[in-house]
Image 1 (tube, one colour):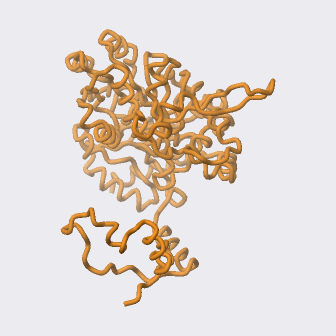
Image 2 (spheres, rainbow, N blue to C red):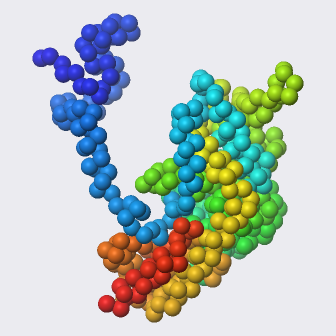
Image 3 (cartoon, rainbow, N blue to C red):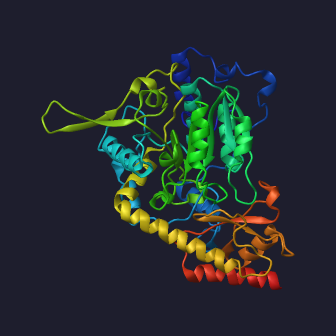
Length: 462
């Protein structure tokens, strides 16, 4: 039986396969898979779909994508880890340049300004979080947080990590998966009225084998944790490190974690010039002080600036490259992949464009919009606009427990009105009952918020 050559699977031409097998000394393709146990091998014939032309394939994929309903058609109040912010056109213009578009973080590739662009990104984020050292971006906030606590464990020589129970469940799962079995994790409870960390519970669990405590500020639940200095004091007394996750767009109006004792800061770059991309386009960052014990534990690349042999000329390149798995694959702190360098360049463009005043203006607009939304929601019968007593930034828990409807029912009816409502928290945080996490940013107008409130009012009164 003749072998069919599939256009999307490389090296299927029989003559090419035969030549490749001869070079490596194998008799057949199946010999390459001899290490796979017989019982795990698929014996039947694979029923691949018929091959399509490039045009047919494009139409097929576009047809699938067109089934999605996006924020272009619906008013959106979803957040919870992927937020809708305004994207300046210059961010897309620069990250689509050919010398940046394939800004792979490994080697070898030619550098047409990529190293400098990443150095500038690192410098801008460092200024934003008021730290000294920032890495080339990780894949997302979850990986940044997981790597940050592993760094803390290597620095302290300890193996227990305490996580605030208010941390995003998706992130805590990533951290636990990434740290196990080397690290043990335990949750610290929080006050269900304010959201603040339970300091009594923290003290009880703060034993001499705790490497770090990780919490987020603003938190996944939206509230601002005001106990940073108290938490830091407890940790310093135990020689444990404080790792804080942060939404960087909040730092135009809120103090950075370094100001209340954070040793390692991490977070998500997506608010800084990245489209939501159906939850894609994520990138994480890690920041620390410029101390050897921290720098040596970064697994990812760090770019620096140095003078060249020509007076007045400067070059950009790796700092302490030998600690990465690129340099010493078997001895690297962690195995580091391609990273998301393009999103780092994008975040650098966003921060350079806005500057300190622009970041402050965006932050103030967000807080004014979210405060207005809560005030209007509070006027609805049976609805509590903000379930928690603490101040909040752009996200807040709306309590629907006193209404006759579940969050699922409310959200379904909002979709019928072309509105994405808040994230249903009933599964992740059952202690809040029928509550939802809403997100309001600078893209929402007064009319948008009024439309949401009026729509919920109509749903509740039917």
